[in-house]
Structures are given as C-alpha cells and as structure tokens.
Image (cartoon, rainbow, N blue to C red; front, side):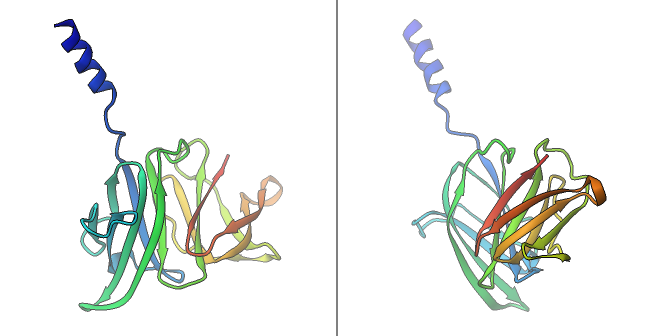
Amino acid sequence: MPRLVLLATALLAVQAPAALTLEIRTFDGRADVTHETRVTVHRAGDRGGPVGRVNGAAEPPLFQVPPGIYDAQAIQERQGRVVNLRWAERLVVMPYPDEGGHHLQVINLQDDYGALQIRRASGDAWAGQLALFRADDRATPEPPAAIAGRTYVLFVVPAGTYDLRVGQGAAAAWHTGLEVPRNRTRLWIVP
C-alpha cells in the first residue's frame, strides 16, 4: 500500500505543464483585421489535426495551448470570400515570467511589418503615455495600431529600429534602438 501511495504522488507531481493563453491578432499593415480572420493553430510541422481554430468574427482570438512551438494559418474573409491568407511558423509559446501565462502573437498580412508589444514590469494595468518614433526621427510619433488588453499596448509598424518614449516632458524616459522584426512580435518591458 505505501508503494501505491508513493506511485500516485509521483504521478501527480509529473503533471503536464499548465496551459497558456495564446492570443493571435491579425493585421493588414496597420489595420486590425482580427474580426475578419479565421485562425487555425497547429503544432509546428504538423498540419494534420489542428490544436485550435477561432473565427475572429464570432469569438476572441484566444487559444489554450501547452508550452510548445506552433504554426498558425490566418485566413481573412470579406463577404464570404477569401482576400488574404498567411502562415506564421515556429511561434514559440513558453511560460515566460514576464507574460503571466498570456502570450501575444501578431500575424501581419503585409510583408515588412512587425509588432511591438509594450508591457509594464509590474504587470499592472497600463497607466501612462507611450509614443513610438523612428530611430532617426523623434519629431513625429508613429500612430499606435491598436491599444489592447489591460496590461499591454501594441504598436504595429513597418519593420525597423524605433525609440520609445514613456511619459512626457522632463519626466519622460526613453528606450532607444528597439528593433521591430519583420513578420514577428517583439515584447518590451518598461518599469
């Protein structure tokens, strides 16, 4: 009997890792087209049975997945017709401590765009002003493509190097030389 209890305890200790929330938003350039897009998520390299499928017009683009590497297909439709299709491959979804179990990925239907997700280190709701500037031009800020969720701000911009201003005036803090990768989502944590 003690061996059975020990075995049961050991099996419970080796449980599968907790599921993470994978949020996939879809953009066409700077325009958020998540509501027009059907997203299907597969384990990386396995296009057989999908892990999940979401129709953006009817439900939020959220998936509960175990940690792993995934491929996602985004199909944008208007009036029942497919207008765009894009694969995002090798999306790494792991329990990163600064994401709190919620991983965001942006799929852009246009080439040469990327996304910059800004989160607060405290994980608190965003309270402050952000402005994103091209690294060589701090005169004109980039318009935010979307402000989403309670804990992050999202910029969808052409891939390149940017400077981020947090706050205004003398109290502003600058984060410089942020690389926004082409066809990927970059996470940046600010205090």
